[in-house]
Length: 433
Ligand code: URA
Image (tube, rainbow, N blue to C red; front, side, top):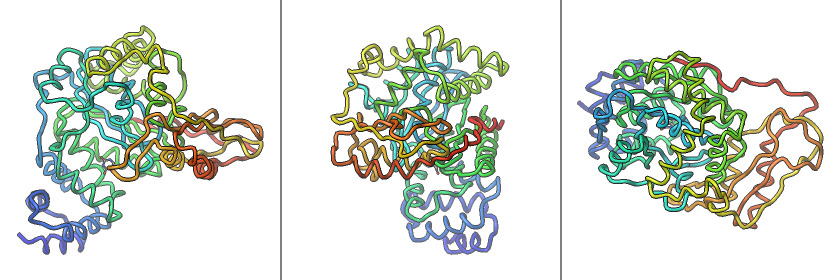
């Protein structure tokens, strides 16, 4: 087999065989096929696409490029969730303890934030003492005892995806449905859970900008998951504005805790309940109504909050911040961003708001950048709200006093006003099963 012929074949819009796909992934991971040959193949895939069989074969080859976690000792109640990435998305911190409080086992690997999106591992690291890296024995023991562990993705989980994703990032080939679907599903399948819920985000803060593209991606991923014998559903959700009010690591942890304390209503809680209830339906076969009621009950009874504290403590963290938020620390400077005119907020560009939080110190541009866990934004107003000129729309938290001007300019470009109340978009577009 020659890489040249495989590139040529895809360039002409033909389907690749399973063996050809395996040859590419195997050779790329081993280093026998260079970046300069994989790059044009990615671009050919970008333009010619891949059919379902090819996408499943690519997923399988990437999944098998490293460790495949065996969770069979926990039976069929293993659960996992994955978000395609967004701004202010702290749902894992709420969904995981809800699920564990109801007897499911969540052995989860998560990522760090990059660019405008946040990552669960960075959020968890804002908790003093919390360890995001555990040995395999510690990881399994914690799942056995607590029902829940979340660690950073290990180097050998789908290493082919790590290498390919880095190449896609610099060759303008990230936003391809078969490449995203196989990238996400190779990691989810390798992580071993039997029941998987995907949160496919659409809108200004997401990879998928339109509902049609989001649904296409969701369908592909669900079909791949089923073809590997997993219970799987995708909830297609709105990322046209940040989720909740907090953007930035420790600020988001505190907002997640406020949902678990049953103190917070609105889009964040609604999406958490939607994700948890879909997972409960998959896991226990409960009806939609029963699953939703059980997820809400886990919050209202305090069971999910107790499970959260137990989990944080088990993983080395100091959970006393739950009762005393000041223990998470506070950024040195707080700046107010005020409305420049009267009117309705007609749009808040989530991607630009994510980038603003990065400018304040909450995110990183390069993987090696340091982040400030206390930096970020608290939104005081959101899309659809009517504001008066001079009213505070957002609070910026930073330890870099000099970042205020750049952050304010960027944030200003993210917010549009109108005289008319904007048409509200749905929070959940649908569930694909
Ligand atoms: N998230 C992933 O893990 N992979 C992609 O390709 C896109 C988003």
